[in-house]
Image 1 (cartoon, chains in turn blue, orange):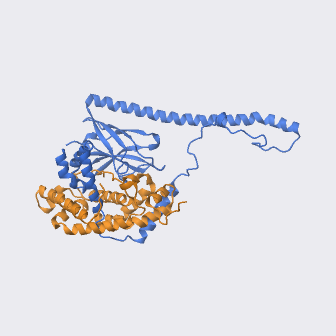
Image 2 (cartoon, chains in turn blue, brown):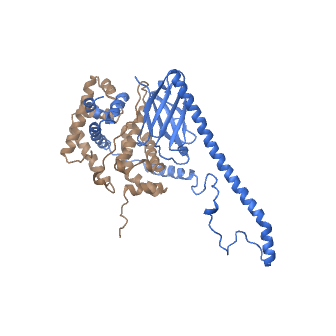
Image 3 (cartoon, chains in turn yellow, blue):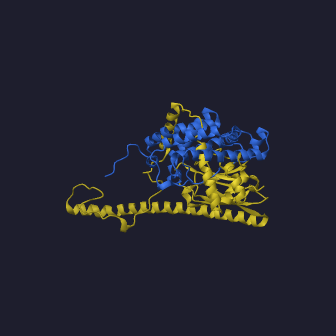
Amino acid sequence: MNCAEVDQNRELHVVGALPWDTAEDLEAHLADCPSCREAVSRSWEMAKMLRLAVPATDPPESLRRRVLAAASADTAAEPDPQIPSSPRLPVSPSHRSPVSPSSRRFSVPHLSPRLTWAAAAATLPLMLSGWLAFQVTALQQEVHSVAQASARSQTTNEMTAEVFLKGMASGGAWAAVNGAEMAPAARGRLYYVLNDGGEAVLFCEGLPPLPRDQAYQVWLMRGQERLSAGMIYPEEGAKLVLVIRAPLPVGEFDAVGVTSEPRRGSAEPSSSNYLWGRVKRS
Amino acid sequence: MGMEPAVPSDQALVARLSARDSSALDELYQRYVRAVYSLACRVLGDPSLAEDVVQDVFLKLWRQPESYRAERGSLGPWLLSVTHNRSVDMLRRRRSHAEQQFPEVQEAPATVINGALDPVDLAGLQEDAAAIRRALARIPPEQRRAIEMAFFEGKTHVEISAELGEPLGTAKTRIRLGMRKLRALLEAEGVVLHA
């Protein structure tokens, strides 16, 4: 699309009157044309005004109670942020605050000084071994969780390599995935195998953190159909990768989108898009 | 020494959402629910579905207050943008259009004038609402109808042309000319449209 065509279509674009492929072409032009970007931005101000041009209708009072109750239930479902979800790292001796001579970690009954020191000497190895055992356990758990993450990463890397190898053999294509309303700064790329199989890899970054009971869900869209392609967990890093295995070639779908959903996933999208990209080329 | 403003700004209330302050959500709800609900009702034509959209919009703000960014514009227009997108998406899903796909249209970020936002923009919204209604009443009815079919009924110019039994170019021209005429009328009234 050129500048003259953008000028002819910008008002249609902001009212949603353009078919999706034409809207996509217009947006693609804006990425490289500041003057058209400015002109379309002015048109968007008219869309903001139009949203006000509706008959004023008062909602029922019950809706307020419903919304506040839902928010309250949401808060109640959140894990207590004070309770750590993973074992703490062992405290290095240099960071341990010195124990004041007057304080004791364990109280002992009042005994004669000789017996007190003897009792302390006898219990010290037991205390020390118990502390060491705890630290070793915590360290083992930390190593295990790191190993698990590493294993997942390694598996993802292997699967990603498989997809690219298949794409090299039978053909592959890239699709840009752009930040949408919920995450305008996010971006991504979708690599998908052409024709043979439904393998694809979605790379994305810049997605905002989510509440702990939520994760990102990837959708493949075709017409009104929304097919879940998998979950992405934002706590796994700033750059996220999802290997997709769809029942048909990903190139047969119109678009890919990313929404926020409960961690167990949803049957259909329940939020606005965080990322969206067109896949099928006419 | 500064004093707390008697009326907290939208930004201050949104900041309190991060601290799970439900009274802040209640305040924002009471400020904007009428505009949000009215828009959802207009698009969906179904109060029950409109209530679902209202809940979705405010719950989304509650769960992810960081998704609203003050540098992109005032909270009211942002809420209405989310409402419009959700409502049109819901409307299109309800209609059986197997051949068409509607992307989430990305709105360009607004420029904040003077780097500051009005503490409570409700009065401004109400004035703007009255102004756009006056302007709509003054453009030719066929242009107004085409704009309404696109914006509030989620129809493309192809669908509008088919429904009205008119050439494709006619629907496009009506929307384009109608929107430009609306802008001229608003500017003549002194309504400031931030570029």
